[in-house]
Length: 120
Image (tube, rainbow, N blue to C red; front, side):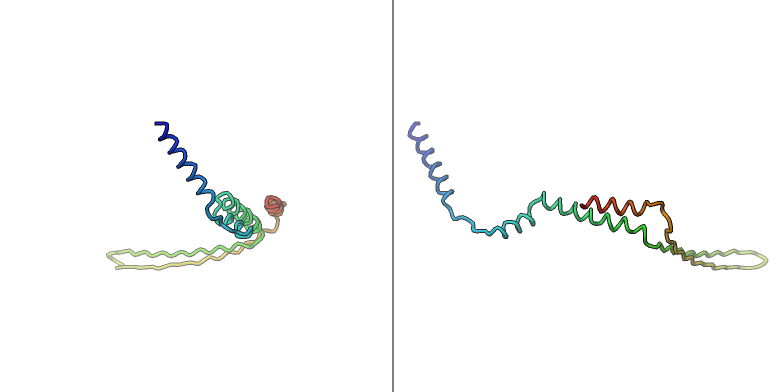
């Protein structure tokens, strides 16, 4: 039993030493950083968070832009009458509206400043 334990321990030590003396991967610092940026889940999550913060400025500035509203409507009716016969009517309409915020009480400007401060 003691001989068997020594043999297993010797084989384990040899395996560890052989594994440590294997060929080393030669990477430059640039390659290591590029691999970390591509595969590290923490870095990927932070990059996605940064992209979301960048989008918050675009959303805050949207309040300064004009808004266009378009509405289309259509209606069809048919009535059957013994005296008048069949009466059909078609109606339709289009409505276009353009609006621009003239005064927001500083809400839009403060929203833009807050979005920029979050990024910084």
